[in-house]
Length: 499
Image (cartoon, rainbow, N blue to C red):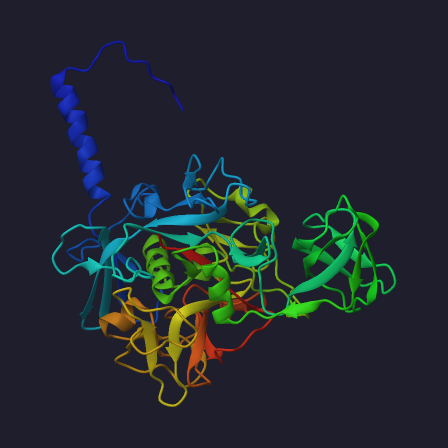
């Protein structure tokens, strides 16, 4: 890059010319922008369009300067005050990603939106928050978790899958790098006494008699002290060995031999959708598990950003080609040096093999792949194929089973067989939520992602795919074959914060 030094100040006419150019650029990057999907074709390719449905051919930097997509950025949310800190760019340079500055989220400007059916064409647009373009209304993601239905100009979606944090005995969901995602039955609790040396997150504890071992996630004290050698409390563990702990002393890789005494086997902690929501709520007002409108908003913006319904081809396969195995066999958050490999806009992949390494889009890691993510506020029914979505006005309460008064019922029905998605609902609510209507596609046609039909009344819905999902995973993949009380080693969650 060449450096230029001005030796003269511009005159008034030149200043006016430059200001006009800046105003032009601002106008170009703040006008409504959308996608057109030709449903009469099985191609996943989308056309980028302006407000008049004319095709736009974007420059390489267009979206990084866009008033909505270009302002999605990573930030840290303080765990006590909920104040927000930013890095020097959208990637989050300068932020501590380990939790010491707070949980890491992506800040999303919300948008006005418009949906249109024109024969076989479906069109979706977004425009800046509080703009007044005819036919546009606020996207349903903006007012969620608000008793009064007040829309927000920004929402916050966790940069990482939810992990466990012990806050003085209260379990809370977290969003930080370097942690095993919290999935059902794969985090364990173990009571200890006679503790003499504090545990360190990440160290391995081994039973002195049994030889059982596991890795420390977090802990809290219920009595005594380390200094006094009588510390008592609960330690949370991951990657527990097949051998069970017994009543014995335990040795810490960092804490040393006989660092504490335990009374028996560790207990697996289940994670249902309602439990995940409660652990997320414990962070304070506005926190919860991602609701269907937050996911749908991300999905729409990804389609606009990439101009394709095939997310795995556009962004990378994600962590989807690992063996199913036993126990937790996915990867930790921030795996494969992904955070240091992202572009300044927060998009990129880890250093591993495509299909075995994480992907990130604008700072949000593993939007699909690695673990299935619970959606708080979407029910589907085996009996008649109907579905219920959290109310668009934001006054509904997210839950595994939506209560009367918290939902809207869809106009159509979902497919009754598993398959690759080939169509979505045609009405505005169903279309904006990207609810499936047909499942007769393939991994390279239509939406390129799969739908798993409901098996219960109601069924909960999970998003994205897990570490062994292969080409069935993707940003549009929905898995509706679970009971509201289900907990499994591949089921996790993602936090949202709607202040």
